[in-house]
Image (cartoon, rainbow, N blue to C red):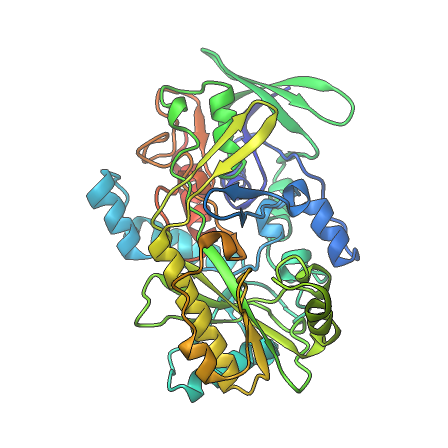
Amino acid sequence: MHYDVCVIGSGAGGAVCAYGLQKRGFHVAILEKGPWAQYGLDITTTFTNYYRDQGFVGSFGNAYIGIPTGEVVGGTTKINSGTCFDTPAEVIFDWNKCMGINIAHEELQPYFARLTELLSIAEVEQKYVSSANQLFVRGLETLGFKNHFPLRRAAHNCQGSGRCCFVCPNKAKQSTDVAIIPQFLEMGGKLLTQTEVVGIQEEKEHVTLLCKDKEKTDKINCSKLVIAGGSLSTPILIKKNKIGTSWRKAGAGLTIHPATKVFALFKEEVKGWYGVPQAIGFKHHDFPTLSFEGVFTPKGLSGLVMPLEGPRLDYWLQHYENVASFGVMVKDTNTGTVKKISHFPLFIRYQLNLKDFRNLLEGLRFIGLCYLKAGAEKVLLPINGTHNEFDSLKTLKACDFSSVKPSQLYSMGFHPLGTCGMGRVVDDHLKVFGSDRIYVADGSVVPTSLGVNPQITIMSLAFKLSDVLQ
């Protein structure tokens, strides 16, 4: 089999790049390791089937930080919240000034507009804002803050099912398998599911891929290759196959937006799983690197992220209909590494910066104060090995976090980026340094932490590549 372009991965970067190239008249094939998602599955089954390694992927360092990604048609867009932010202009300015990258913010704006239409991006309607988000806003306003805002999301005819991260049952969330891949297939594109690329060889006239599916191993040839396996898989492929001249640098520069959340118990029913879990955003003027966003963990998975045991955990779970939660993430200043070590196909090393960590703790305190001000009976901070439940503003305000260590914090990193960053492994046009035929179009090319949800940045860079690739 021979294609003009093969694209490894069907997520934010891969699907968009393949769509753009197919629209230009190239004969394109997407190779996806995961299957099409099934609908009607319970949340736990969805979690184990469509999250990479059943969701148990994380970094090791001064804290264990979970890093969930999708292994399904649509990639991580199938299991994310659907929240969309344009790339901040100041971030691109810093890339150009400090890293010698030549991309203008104005260059990307047409792609922001195209994606807004393609993904039906719009602000969450008030009627679908979850009660957990509304209670946070109530407390926020009682404390005198008015600058909260509805988040923009890729959704069409949303019915507030509350399962954005666990396969939207109504196909309302516009993940790439819903909004982009069907159009790609209608134009004549090819999608090979449950197909893993295990070898890549760049030759003079083409690129040869060694692919393995359920039944056999086969070879596929293509004139150009776009690797879009995500920030965790792409550097492993580049290093394993020694692609280009900078392959040794692949896997460094990992940023993840470390994030955490607060649980709050109310007297009244909350039923935080109804509506859009990530509907409201907020920025605090005293903590510019923090972003506060709505979030909700289903009951079946909540025990994994609550630092409780025995009767205390039972009590929260028995009253889960009355529980609200809200999250905070930090624009991280440290970077980590992704590599393959011996029998470990994926080993992630990341040290949570202590200043970032302290800011996250203050973000947790602030969320807790908001919920207590909104009438919560008590709040639970995700800190292990110390007092973590508070039932009054006074005790939470007075709590001294100075002795808390990063290893005690329950946290996640939902936005892995940077492991094949522009200026290090690929050039401004996303071509791998030293290669004539191989490009990268996923979160790994984003060279620094963005401070916002990265889906639109990844998609815009992929669209740009699809427009210029010859």
